[in-house]
Image (cartoon, rainbow, N blue to C red; front, side, top):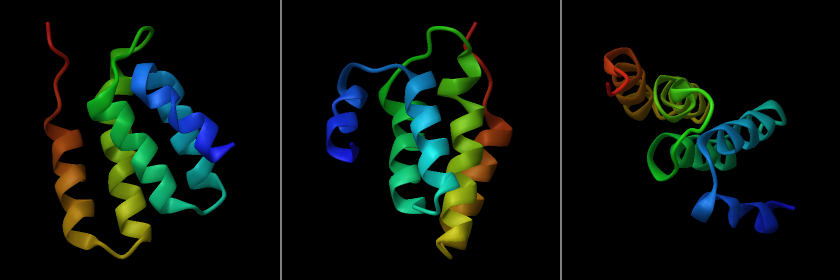
Length: 88
């Protein structure tokens, strides 16, 4: 499942990547979750809700890195989430 789903990121959408990150976060696989949240924020675009390619995955990246004990990265992504603004 994990390897099959990685192909989604190459032509996927932020909403799907975010949901996959949420799934992995829920089962405690924070490194895998971080990869999906990163893809949602930086590698794909949203089609329904612009926040799924911006502040929402950035907040969750912060949470992942906090769980992994990477406080510097957690703070960095928390700040990016606070500063994020939708492009007009």
